[in-house]
Length: 183
Image (tube, rainbow, N blue to C red; front, top):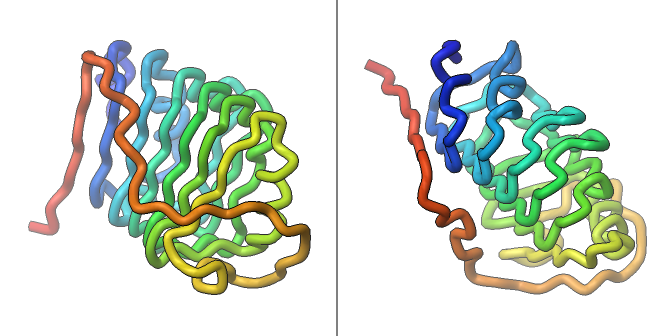
């Protein structure tokens, strides 16, 4: 990711599709964008095994959408990262390391596990959602067994099925979509 990206201080939404980004400084640059509210990563746009939201980064991010990320194995939120995060949507991913650190997201409202989404320790995630002070909802598009990779333990937490999540980031400012082609 080039330095010009840092100058996009009014950027509200960014959509990466097959961009093949690597950790190097990508997340640092994106995390420093002061008005970024929606981050969408699609079709192997990020090539690392873990997506880490570091302390002090993504201070205005409200929506995270991850789809068809074949290399991604886990998502982790450090304390002090993404304090405005409200919605996380994951589709067509296999998160063998799970989704970790949601307790550090004080404004979290919803996690949606969409079609073909599998998560390790789904029971643990359900427990974390159930004990979260903001009382977010964990929504499953398919039967629980279709989303669970195993290593499950825990309590019964209400899980709702849903059809879709509306686009929450409609603020009128900069938006950008980056795609790459194989040719």
